[in-house]
Length: 179
Image (tube, rainbow, N blue to C red; front, side, top):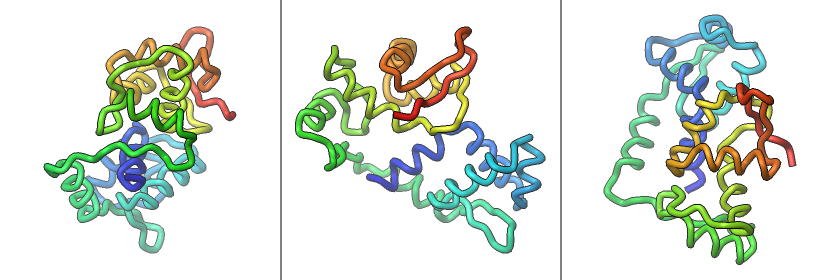
């Protein structure tokens, strides 16, 4: 489950998807990737490191390439007939585990948005799919949230109201707040 969660997290970031798209056209160095995608060197290193950790890409002598075999295995697992069953993190307290089991589908999507205080548990689950030190547009936030529930506007507002995310006054930029 953690491996699949890391894969989904990797694929939920638009920049990482651009990197995958670029590498699907051919191998490239970190500098070439940063230049073509107009990324700061630090950001390119962070994204490439995460994609390499998940196993989607590999690096040899500073040249990155797409790990076609690994992508095929992950896709096969994801699309196989056996559906993943959501299992709450063992570190959670029993009330939180119970709330997650009651309000999440087996695939981890939100079947029902609960009222407070159970809403806090759902928001804590949802916020983990956002990276610290990453600026998201409203559209990007909505895209991530829609993987879990269609009511992205309400959940986006709830994340901001709960202090888990912050935003520019005009709603043009969102970011995860450190707890």
